[in-house]
Length: 591
Image 1 (cartoon, rainbow, N blue to C red):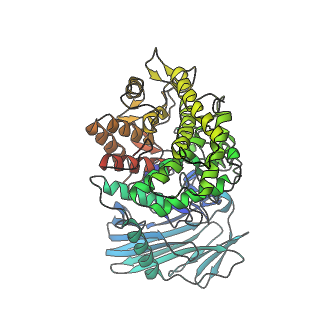
Image 2: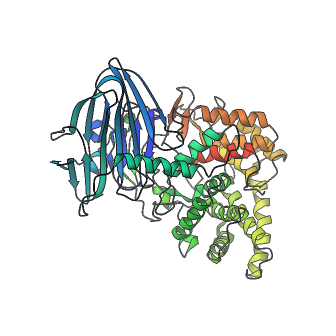
Image 3: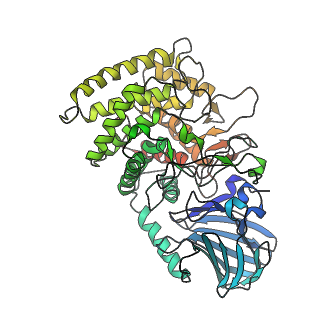
């Protein structure tokens, strides 16, 4: 049976990521890019769908693991009856072809080890042609080639490449798996000591740009390191998660592909990067957005491929049995075709946050802003999909309407004295800002219930309503906002954390949504409830796994992480809230 989600750690090189279980199996890897087909897919099935196991063959009494300092280098200690070994694994952070390095080091006694490698391309379906090579083994299929450098004798059969060996105290044995295009020159063998030194220096140098802030620094830095592993170092885009197909409801069908870039996350990303001191990464994310939007912002999608490509056709992978039986396993994402009004406001808010940080509002940004608000002026009151991309009938969602208002007001504030902006458009937007705000207060607020509702004409709560005071729609002490926060505390809290929507009568529910819990902590801070804000943030941090990773959701009753992992929105929420609670920061609503 596949390991629990919380058993997985991540290693990455800014081009892709691999998920490594505590037992020593790499069960998920898309190579050479985040959104390439998976060549290890045991996470969504079993070992026959591709994995790379490296672990003691003896009985293991205890396993502990950690990242080495403030890096992406994973260290796992296995203690058996006969001895103690450490497996150090990472993806080299350099300009060489992408490689996974796994080093077995004997720390005490003698430990018998087993290695089993099954590459299965096409999302766990197709084995490559496999042959012995002077360096170990070589695998080829279509455009892809992988080389395993091995210092121990390998056994090759039709199902796997395997080895058994013994590690004595003081001995190190390194395995290197390297990807390259099948028609390219075979990469030279990697020098393991140099690779680990270069990778460690790269990570230590990068995270040193984060200055000391306070009690949550350890969690902030681990989240920042995790987020960097989700950023494509060629394009500057950030994927929403490293995985696909992990269910939002255990055993259910809400199994989505998150290996893409969502514009919805843009402001969350920029505030986290800017407030943490990573202006270069924030600027590259802005540039990625501008390239993705292109010359017709009105036609922009809500989600793109990591390189900014627009095609994300969704299909089911019937041959994969799914994580613990949750089907269908989907690749691609049909949400790319949804109309989400909030995304236009998110981009306008992003450009505003960048300007507050002192990053130039370039002529191209101004042109995109003008095109967006001109489009918003024509479509702001049209129904669409919600922030959660539920595939239901379109509605006028309150949060989406608020973000339309945000888009208009941010433009007005930025260009109040700009003579280059069409004054007729400016006057129209001033009127429109008042109209949208009035309409929201009339139709998005239910006076009988005393709180804002998910969509016009509805009565349900939605945790996205917590963002209303954060974006400055109304003051946090306005009775309508205070009533909404109180209603969410009453009806959407579960185990001290926040659900994004009410429970269903059927009882098959997703878990608490961790980013929403961070948003409530932000609201507490704005209300002057500092102790409650800190306690709620601590609860979010406490549900992270042993190496500090968080998924999209958490099952408070089974005490388990659920959904795709690591989830960028969750780690962004942690960083933003921890920095907000620690001192002055750039805020979406001002400051």
